[in-house]
Image (cartoon, rainbow, N blue to C red; front, side, top):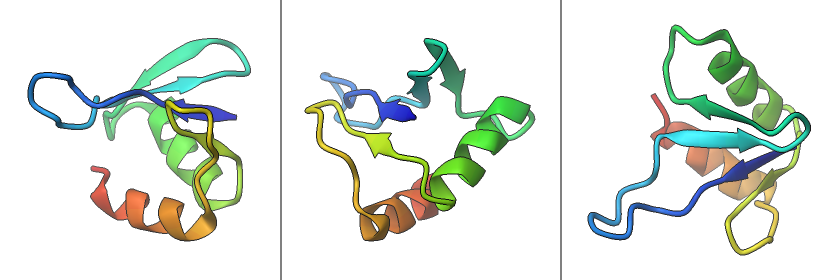
Length: 70
């Protein structure tokens, strides 16, 4: 299970990192990082993605979110 972090409070831009809750790892958005590639694959295949307010993203929201990632 993963959790999206809040947007940058100054710029409003998404924070380019995700929290993997199962082992408390923080994964940077880096295409060369195997854990990042696994994250993208996992959420594309229905592993839950939580947003900062505790809500889980729907499949449609995840599909749109994936389009914004590197």
